[in-house]
Length: 493
Image (cartoon, rainbow, N blue to C red; front, side, top):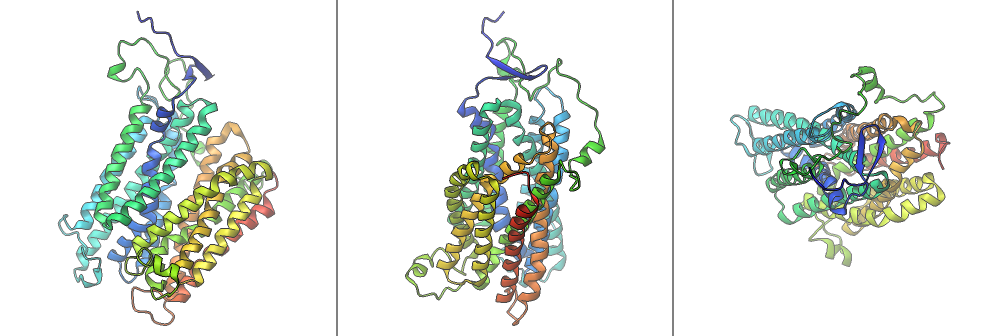
């Protein structure tokens, strides 16, 4: 019999116990998957898809990019279902680990297939390696490349969202409530760090094939770290003979109450909140406001094309001359990395003060301030061509976005209709980002195409009026986000 004394525990449900203290190292392990998520989603949306769209559809790249982003947004609809299923899953590995492992495995396969399809190594599937698909007269091969790449991309995004949903649930499962704030803070930090690392990596290597290789390595590495830390003690071979340990909340427990059977009506309820019910009215309009914000913000996915078509390399200012090697039309993808990094830096500087200020003044003033800055940055980009002005507006937008992200979740929590059904309502809240990410490019791409044709610019370039219409659309959507919050949300400060 083991003489090892059991760890101190607390219990929030019958048959469920969690260690009282979780070390900082273990918290980092549990949240490490956020690094991979941040790297993938940020560079996919602003670098990879923009370049691949140009290769696959050189004269209609904005529509191709909108299609990819719509698929990415559509894939987020799987999140509530994945959460519902993982809540009811039972295994000796816990509720979440099989979903994280399975989702990450399919994600890696999808990334590998995208990588291979773009390289021409699949029979009958290829597009040019020199980024000039207009010279390729083999329409069948290009169609095959588009089909294979699109299907594998959709599968990858669905798998990523399944793994992400399960990974984010590890914190409430395995971490005491008094440490969840620290754990969530580490998750956000790792997500931002992953995004910055991805942009910096591409800026340095300037090779899309190398970026795909990085995707695979990062997903495998950080998923493995999360899984090693998340597997319940007692289910590992190395734990045998150490004495009986009570399972963590993420593990299977014969003493736990029986879970309710699968119910499709409960799943559908995860996607709907009534605007007429007084108890859910405020939360519904927070959802609408968030949807509008992401609608406006998602037009930044066209930044690569904007820098290619509108940036003025001939600006004579001292700052412009200093920026010219880093922000130029010759390599718009690397220039986008510089803008993204600048935005992330200013966003990080804004996040902590904005969060602290919202605790004193309420969430709404901070959100409105953030929306004003974001709207102004969109208008500024619409009329700017000098590198210094573009970077300056990027810093303004980054500061606004950082302020918004600091209070986004807090505002949703403040207006939750029922804490006992928080998973259901936060699922609806998450769908708001999906709707916005879809609406932004799906409306923005036609605006860019129609108004960008005025003046007959040579394909694939778009004219100045196209980008003016695109960014004004984004600015108005974000302004509407603030207006909805002020006008209709009454139960939160």
